[in-house]
Length: 148
Length: 89
Image 1: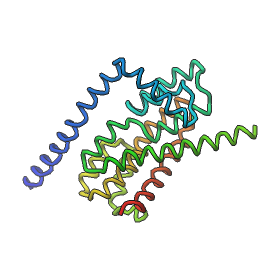
Image 2: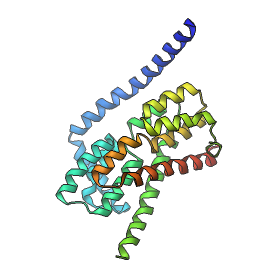
Image 3: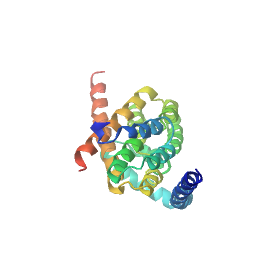
Image 4: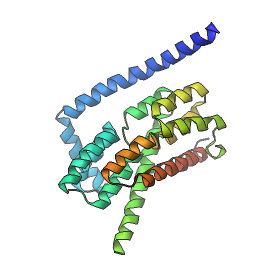
């Protein structure tokens, strides 16, 4: 009985230690990155890339924030832009589909790599399926607008 | 679960991941003692669809139908799991 408790305690503690050693430095890096001048440069580069997916320049900040920091942060910055009327309905739906499939790409991926998943497959597989569905829904929404 | 190449126990990981968060799913994966291929498939499925209740509420704040988004995420995670089962050998 004591052996089982010992085993469970040390097993879970070592897993916890592995995850802590990966997640805490990442969190510190992300918090620093958010407040550094590199953030604006990064957003400008993102704006150039997402042009090919059919997004406008205003969607760059919500998308970059969501993909790096998580869905809550991305949605928060997006609400500001929606209130100002900078993003139209089609783009709101497309950004939401993009963010809901791939958000917090650094932190969440690191947790699963820590327990033994293949990094290349879970990272690029997720991005590939996201881009596929965003392109698909972009075409579908265009089709609906044509019949209005 | 056989369409995803996973044992029946692994459905526990999907249910905890869908309803709670990914940390609880990680705990269940470690408890089940799966191999690397099964962990990769499960990780992709859970990463695509997790914390569905909380994140559905966030989506409804932005103005997108939360039921559509939830259904879409679960469907996408099934598609991803099925594709990875075919691709990974």
